[in-house]
Length: 425
Image (cartoon, rainbow, N blue to C red; front, side):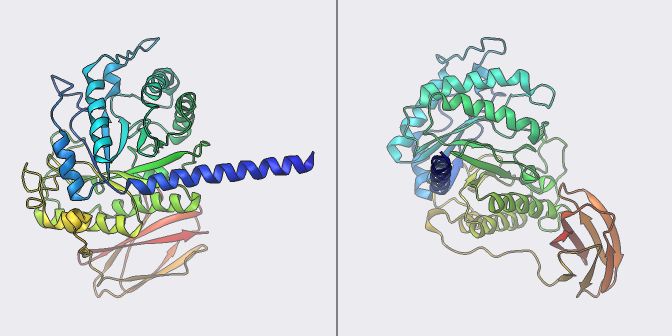
């Protein structure tokens, strides 16, 4: 009996490992992708769903640019009743449009993520009442699309959950995953943490039990920079913010640190489902930002999806989508149209800070090579400032009162900023 038990555990371990290897391989196979944005998720469109915002020819051009995958955001909430039994109107024109994109991606040998996007209100107190409706929607979608090749087609449960803790999100997503698994065990499911799927959402986030999952995050930090000038942004941020030195640069570093550290700690597949910078920053700052994000994508070997290419977050100079109209710095940073030029990190490296000891026990010191006064801020894993001080050349930082964990040391001098991790034991 004991031998049989050990063999059973071994088989379970091997089967889980194989399943996880499958999810990682599929995650890697996504490679470079694009979102079909401002289309089927556009609940604000008066004549939704609009059939011809994107066409097969557009996907042909995206493939020419080097895209291997497509993410299709869809506001399925608009075709799902809000009261039991939560009927889903599969006769809606929305489904005919989705089926057209499925045909196009099949013909062009592109991967496709079917993404449930917008209009799902979640909170710690209400998620239980939302779960039956969300699960029923996915029971309909899983049955309708289970015929699709699981090597090429993926299911994303819900875009950018927010106003809910990860502790509440986990049982909600688990219930939906279990529902999908009644109809298909082969397809890989995409999930993400709270905080609008930002990297910060991975703080203290625990993986779900299902092993055929891929985790995703979105990168729009610093938000006051990427979303400046948009009247619909909440809160509204005025134009004129540069990058780097936006005053919020650390949020980009922090978000990526959390997402990548989580990936490496749990050895689970993670990809970048959305990223973009709006049209309102100056051209140099837009290039600086995309160069920084592109370098992160390359360094971390991530599959990644641009949110937009021709609208509010464009990669091209005009509405014409071609190799001639792509913005050069975006082409370089994202390696479009075979462009293998390496981007140049635009953050200054003249300003250096040394921290010791690291990890720190009760105290650490900072030494600066700047001749100017240095402003130091210590940020916890939510980005909250827990300590601040100013110094010349060197200072001692007392952290005895702080909880153990990872912190960011943000130091600024002469308009240059340095960010470094410090572990407090």
